[in-house]
Length: 334
Image 1: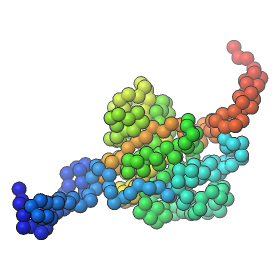
Image 2: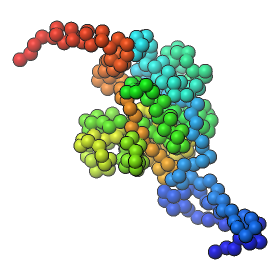
Image 3: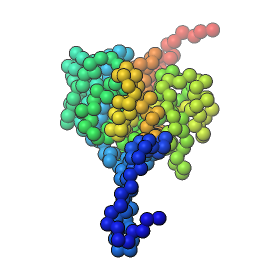
């Protein structure tokens, strides 16, 4: 015990390496005498609690579209829920703006800036095309946008997914609302069948008490095998054979850039590896979005995404009628 009386300030620095998963920088405790009492101040540290230096208020979004297999998908044209022809990229940008992100950055391959600018539409108040100089992976693509993010929390989308909400609020709006309420990084997830694991990053964790859709994340694996998932990623309460896979959107704090930096050579900077370390630095949650995501890059992905958009919009009855006619015309097989 250190008596507070007569002490104007006493500072104790705890040197040495921090305990694992508790802190990553020295912590300083300050006692300031106030009469016979004391005030105890704990300087901000990077711990499992939210890092209060990074207030989560989302005004920027980042879309990654520089991957070899992603390059053309965002430029494909579909018909949105209102029956209006748009590129997939424009639909994603509108999702970001509706969630409160009026500044949008898109990471592209060098030379693709003009095509993506034309495909993005005119919705955001600021649109920045960010070339990734070398194709060094997903994590490196995010790191390329560090200057655009400028130390703020941000909403991130992959460029080859589209989203359809089950409620009046868009999927991005749901995610941002949770992140701003919880004041921490949040990844959107969706229960996904085991046979789809090769297409998605997957999390392990446990449900937040008294919550139906929030999970504390313990581990992250990128495109795990069914055996890996069964051993490491079981989440109590999910149906057998289902796992919580990424939805293709995240709200992330700038801590993610520090973690990507720590992974060494640029080619080794994978987002899933950085996300695996994130629970050791700050609170990190998963949110089960009320909606569905559609991966444009899987076989028939564009077709399924178009059907999902159409069946959720004003032309649903007409589309169903055309599908019935199409099925009726198919030859019977024995």
